View (spheres, rainbow, N blue to C red):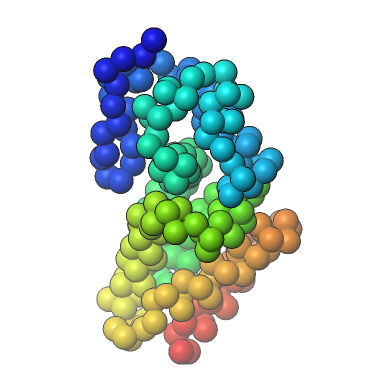
Length: 208
């Protein structure tokens, strides 16, 4: 039996303490089963009781690690993102176009991950129907927005963009086409295509 374990919130992500930390194989089984169930039945129909049963562990073990389905989804999606190479801030590339290109390469690495391609479309569909999930995912959305804001702020500091540039629209101009091609259509997007997209997006943002 697992006893005296708790979840400590650190930076918005559940961090295990106590006995639960000593049983990573249980956490791994729950994580794997959660994603399998999500990909199979969708977030709305996903049951944590079913996840625990199919993972071969007791419900108490799951609830010691995650307090709710939205909490578990947020934590595991953040962990999944962290495992994809190249998503760390790439730093100043010297120009808006070069920064957009670097962001495009990082986005491609994330969106080509097999699990991401299977669950992300359902995730965003579920957010519109599940207020608790929307609230749980908001910290990761804010982190993404902060990274893009940093990129735009650099362009403003260089004199490439005016200070009042619409940062959200600039983000949508780039991320939207990349997401559509890779996740919705399931097509490839090589470096040449990302470079072209970065060039066109930078030109559109500057012209606006």
